[in-house]
Length: 464
Image (tube, rainbow, N blue to C red):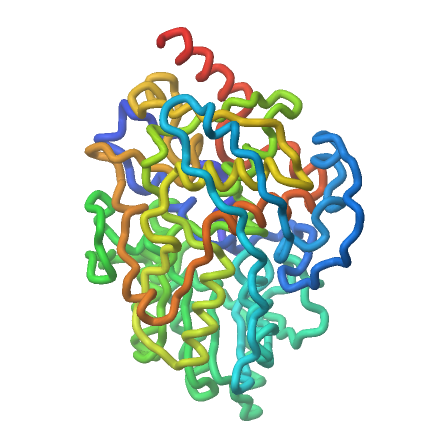
């Protein structure tokens, strides 16, 4: 068993006063794309490939009823249609307002592949994994899951599941290999320990055609310099077998890459930035679209505190786009290492505009919101931290790890990676959020609390 549940535990705040000596390890962990060793089974969300429900007259709900009756308003978040919203709130925002965001069209249906492949998925039941499985199914591939059966064990009952633990019990895989079983490709979502990554690769080598590994941008050692590609410097030392920790997450993921490529030099490695989308249990990016939904509800005000200005850069990749790219790499037998980063040049203004627009539309009909853009020095002076209080944001100031959200992913783009508009990601997060139990929605796991947001807004208002 691993000692740390990556992605769930909040990290200590990073204050501006200490940014020049900022320990990079403090935000390494929250950059991870998915969530290993989460034994508490979360309720399975509605499939993103579910059919659009028949047209019906829209019921009349208050905002409180919509946000309380989880799932009543969003039976199919993957393809939910929304009406054109009112953006008066953006026009009244303090400082420059985000540009209006057009309503995203429903995602087109996923086409069947020309050839059905046999795919082995290592992991596949928490965040990124289900999106990979859904995309594989939509493409018509044959799927085998290998996992412990602890997280969401009933999520894909119709699929072949091999039970085991890559940290010690690979016997189910060994039996299949001994019988002469073959898979066209492995999609590995659960590699965290170099020793065990190597062992799995060695065992599976005679039985597979390709291998795609999910890594992370945390393998890079230079987080200070923006606009680096896959050639940027990476960790060179790591423990071969140790519990995952804040300090070792990036180095150990790099170790997994190296050990895999020793055994399978033609494997593909994807290095995603912050992963967003439905099913994310950390609320790391989801805070922004959810915050727009809560405008004027309970103890949340209609003024949203946001960092610096609408031009502030961020970098997130939708889990469904990452999943589609991994499947594409498997289908096309591509190898190499790819930064997988989402929409180029994404700004906080675009994120807020998309979030407010979709929240203002039916079925949510959130109250009008304004955005208060606050300079970083003022935020830090009021005890607001980057990343944890302000998810997906790192200030562009000396000493901050600003390069983490400003990397280059043109290699992945050339290989077939296609990100969806951020408006679609925000809309679908909001619809998914409505399907969750009230207890889960009672407290966001990242971002400013309602009380702290009010306090900071009041303090900044008095000072201005």
